Image 1 (cartoon, rainbow, N blue to C red):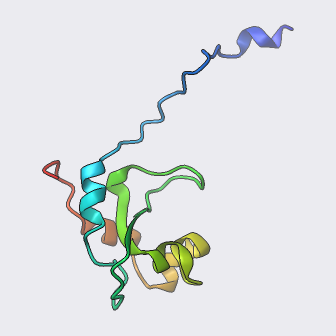
Image 2 (cartoon, rainbow, N blue to C red; image 1 turned 90 degrees about the horizontal axis):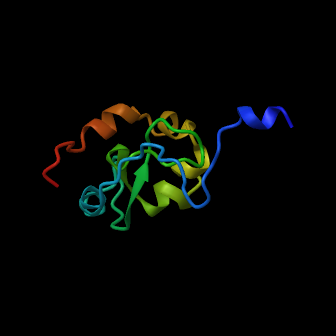
Length: 107
């Protein structure tokens, strides 16, 4: 087939690096912070990846915020259920919330 010579060759078992930055220390610190939703008093905190990526592709760990399990996944007004409407519903600016988190490499 003529088209086959124009397709890039893949090696078995090697996945291309997509540039996602991992920071387990930051995620551990984040899980000890309060929920980013004002007035929420839940203590079951998860790291919610909210960076500008497509669905099914997690963003960098430094683009995560602290959300309780309810606001992250479980409730009707959760980030996973509302998607982009989450920020409008809770009257939050995604970039303001994520910029409040420390970005230094000291964690």
